[in-house]
Image (cartoon, rainbow, N blue to C red; front, side):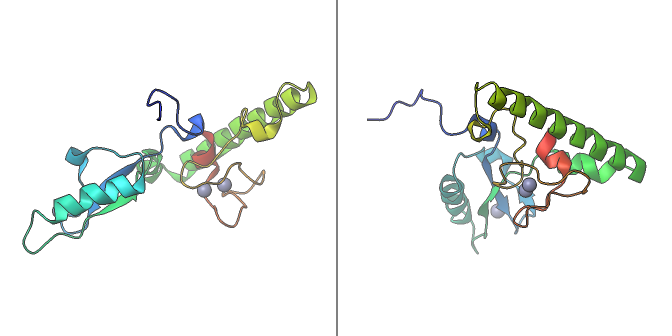
Length: 147
Ligand SMILES: [Zn+2]
Ligand SMILES: [Zn+2]
Ligand SMILES: [Zn+2]
């Protein structure tokens, strides 16, 4: 028996969900809603595809956070400021995490004040002055790790 009221997984991933992208219509099918797992999104996509002749080829896709839309509108100077602000936030969180672990309150693996990437499973921003995370599997911006 599973308790549906139990919190699922890491709270820092609470805003990670999946939606259905239909290439045939070139749009996200917001009317289908959001899904907690890619399997659920694919299932909804399959139902959608079956309603058309010829069938559409919609698939479940990871929701892209609104930050991407914001980034596209920024000028070079604004981007640099956002970058610096993001590094400040990440640095401050790291300091806070270090304080806690020194005091034996929590170690950094507990996820206290971490800066996980909002675009992939990268658990913590790597690098100080880079414009992107140095972790090879990530390479997403500091901003994606900071908000
Ligand atoms: Zn469609
Ligand atoms: Zn990263
Ligand atoms: Zn990433």
